[in-house]
Length: 374
Ligand SMILES: [Zn+2]
Ligand SMILES: [Zn+2]
Image (cartoon, rainbow, N blue to C red):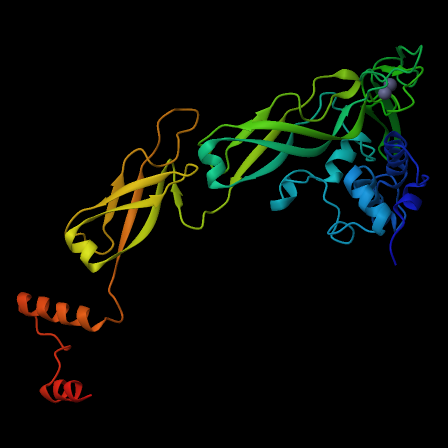
């Protein structure tokens, strides 16, 4: 049974993007597990997210309209942060909504007005690290509400003194206990401690000045970046309440392992196989470097031993934000041939004789006679 995403969001199949966003926003407020205590609220909330994930993305929506499902999407779980989810980083729906709805706990502190920092992950290949790369990031955040330009004010609205706390931002509650009446001061639950409320709130964001929105940004990752290094994008995090300072977006870089090359800081290690003659006589090899189409000349010295390391200067990774490069370390494996042609066998036997080595390969007289007769 395919789930009907339009039914879940209670919109028509012709709904516009902004209608879908509005419907999601409205339903999310009703179903958020912090607010809705029904047993199936969490399940419904997940369904709602999945529906929004598909219908808010024009590609996924088109696919869903045509085939009734989204490949790899539905059933595969809702991915809130496209890139961050790859390694479980990023942030969850919970964080986003608990700050947006202010949470449901009675004893909360004054509502934080500045937007929070947000985190996403970004996977890079070693080749991308070598050249530096432009990357697109898609993430959801509380963005400034376009209708009210982040102020939270509806048409003709303004900030007025909070009636509940008379503008103090605090309310005093009295508890009757056996020790007598106890007074406790708490943050005003109406104005969140600001002492002000909006008389006509913006209908789209309900006076918050910010709304969940999908962001598409493109970032320039400089070359030489390290695994685990973070890039901070100022103001790209969560928008603040009523236009207060936005948080930052912190992009944490993860560099994938390379099949052939191993990174060690700005240096790169690799391994090459050479023959016994190349090892003994020396050789010049050309191997693939880390830069696009790069061929690196590796000079194997004569008498090169198995596991010996040959250093090629300035052929490692470009140093972060600098022009110079680290070094390439080539670890040599000398391959002893497992089977020989007749000629190779003869030459090796001759060589063994020259070295005065006692070898097993020498053929017996009867063997030689057999070979002549055959
Ligand atoms: Zn608004
Ligand atoms: Zn108040």
